[in-house]
Image 1 (cartoon, rainbow, N blue to C red):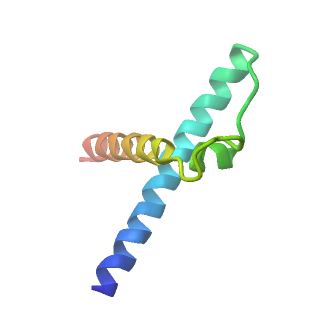
Image 2: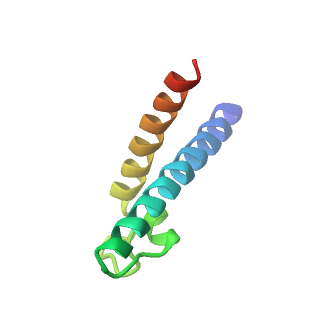
Image 3: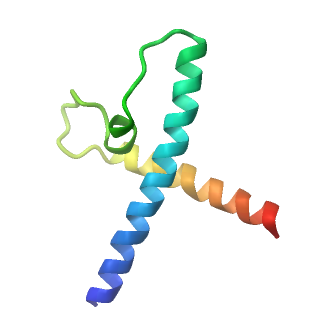
Length: 79
């Protein structure tokens, strides 16, 4: 039971970090081109600093979605 929980937590952490990194790179380039204010890396991982919600799950869902699509595409290219 504990092994499964640790594996799930590590997997979730890795997926969130991969997705957040991809979103941060894309967002930084996009916001530089259109001269909009940029967000920090932590905001891409955990949500906006001034969020009304204590735990903003939407960013983690988006990060997971982006990471899964990236890993599927990477696997498809490498195979």
